[in-house]
Picture 1 (cartoon, rainbow, N blue to C red):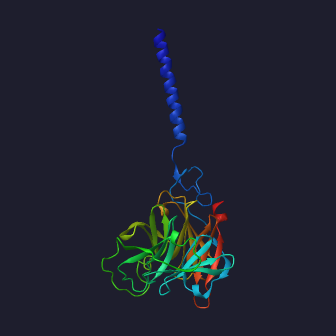
Picture 2 (tube, one colour):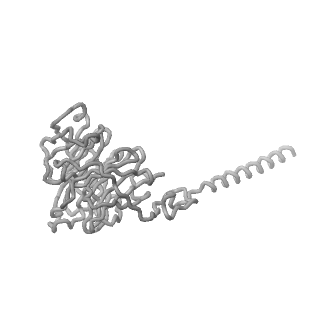
Length: 329
């Protein structure tokens, strides 16, 4: 009799424990929705971001840092490394990196790439060991059959001063969905043009500039030397042309710059994504006031970015600063 009572009591205890566990798990069930409090459709019940956040129209006026030196009148790519801003000019410019001191706003170093040619340099990225220069502009006639990324070891640049020469390694690639024999098109009418590049974990990522599609397509590419194929991952309707990209690895935030066909410039903040699904997290578009042809962007730290604009008509080449603090409170 005693054993039957103990068994019953154990059964009852286990049943209650199971109920409590299930109830506890239910209270932590995944609820998908918008988890960003800055969004107009923020869902307080959601604990899994499904990329559905929408934002009220926002605009900011970048702060002028300096008018760039004349040698950078067509600056196109930018990174911040070794306490210097590294830039270059786009297609037709010299195969040279220019390093600017942000305190004096003057160029303190130049680095020429040996056995290299600036067919259409458009963006620059970096990881812990290397710098990557993307020669992948393709807006002239859309018929470029292959693209190049020059890879420079940072160890070749450290400890040097003044003007130097380095020999880069080469990554050559094609897009997996581009026609094998691209057709010659009128200028500025191809969907396989690119001006934006980042390094993220063990891969490079390209954000294309679609002249016809008005979108940007995300491609993934190996960092290894040699010939590769850029794999299509996703796309995003940005309502314009993407011209620059950078990533802050400490916060996993990406910033894209661009402008619409009417000339209105903007930036996109991509954040709270999982893995390399950059377009599956928050995608906040912010208008940038002031008429400029913005071509590049670089994180200076987690809260500040520099934006580079090339000379255009009566507009001078500029370096501007933008604070991101208010967007991530």
